[in-house]
Length: 452
Image (tube, rainbow, N blue to C red):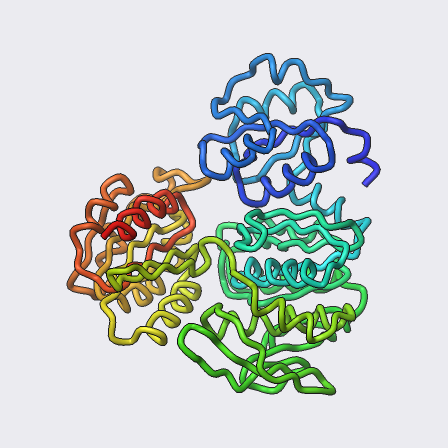
C-alpha cells in the first residue's frame, strides 16, 4: 500500500465501469482527489459526479489533465479500453499507470482479504458476504461487481480489517489479489478471447486458488477440481458445508444449513433459485468461520435484498410481472429462466435480450439459442460490442443468432426501438436481460407498467 499512500490524485480511465467505480469511490472516501474519463454518461457516472468526482466524456487533453503532476497522480485504467488519447498522454509523460486489478491487489495486501471468484455467481456471493459482514458489524470494506440493493452502492467502507472483493477472471485480473479467504463458485468456459479454451480457464482458477495460504479458508463448489486441498460446499448433496430441505412458500425460500458438526434449520429469504441458495451456503460458511453467530446470520439472510439487475422483480396492479437481470452467458440465462418457470410455470414469458460481445455471441451461439428458445416470445437486441469491433467479427450479428432460435415469435430490434416493440406485445412476464446498456430500458418500462 505504500505506493498508494504517495499519491493525492487518482485519475481513472474508464471510471464508469462497475469495478473501476468501486475503486474510485474508495479513494474518494479516503479524502483523495478523484477524476476520470468514460465514453458514456450513465446512471453510475452521474452518481459518481454527485459524490464529488469530476468526470469527462470526451477524449480531450484539456487543462484538467495538463495541470496534473506525475509526482502525486496515479493513473488507473481498465484493459477494456484499448485506444485512447488520454491514456497515451499519461504514458508519454511518464505518469505511473496501473491496471485496476493491480491497484485492487495492493489494497488487499494490507487487509484480511475475502475474494470471491467464478464465471457465474461471484457478484451475488461477494455482495452477500459483504451484507453479512455489515450486519455482523465486522470492520470491512467491499469492492463489488454489482450494486447492492441494501447498500445502494458497489462500495462500502465499514473499517479496514477485512476486504471483500469480487475476483474477476477477465484478463487473469484475479491473480493480482492477495486472498486470505477465497471462494470459487464455477469454472465454466467464458472469456475465450483471453483464455482460448476451457482447459486454460480452469488452469487460471487453479492458479487463483493456489494464492490462498490456508486450505481451510478455501471454499470450492463441490464437483470443481481445483488441484489442492480445500473445503467444499453444495446444495441438496452432502459436502463440508451444504444446504438442503429447500421449500418455497409464495416468494420465500426456506432451507436448512449444515456445517461439519451441526445443522441449523429454517433459514429464510426472498432470493429465488437453487443457485442462489448455493451462493448463500458458502457465504454462511465463511461468516461462521469468522465467528459470527447463527442468530445474527439468520436475521441478515432474511433482510438481504439482492443486487440491482440480478433478478430485480416488480409485480404490478395489472398482474404483470417485470424482471430485469444482468445474465449474459447461457448458463446464467438458464438459471434466471429456470427460476421464472419454477415460480410461474403457466405465464406467458416475453424476453428482450441484448448479447454482450461479438466473441461471446460467436463462442456460445448454440447455448444462447437453446436458452432463448425457452421463452414464449423473443426480442433480440443488437449485439453490445463493449471493447470489440464488428469489423473483426464478420457475420456475427443478432440476425445470425436469431436464425438458431427455434421460436416462432422472434425478432431483432435496435435498443432505441425496443421499448415501443415491448409495448405492443402480449405477455404476463417481461424479462429484460443482458450486460450492456439494455439497463436504459428499465426506468421507462417500470414507469409504463406502473401506470397501466
